[in-house]
Image (cartoon, rainbow, N blue to C red; front, side):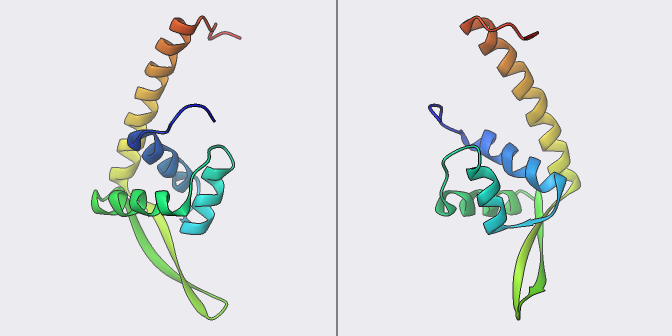
Length: 105
């Protein structure tokens, strides 16, 4: 992908994934990597920041004799995700105008 993901956009992507279903770090990385080039070393600081800001919470689940740490979105996380979606729509519409894209296509 030509364009870089900024921190808020990456936060929105992670929150969007976790809003659909609780996920553990490796799964999150794989889902984001399906669309953009990102490493686990980039994703884990994002997860820590989202935890610190109380947009995500964690819980452990046994899996094949070990615990997996799952991430779950909080009510505050849903609020900020809604804000990010609104901002993304506004931003995308403005960029589409600038580059000559018809939003009705």
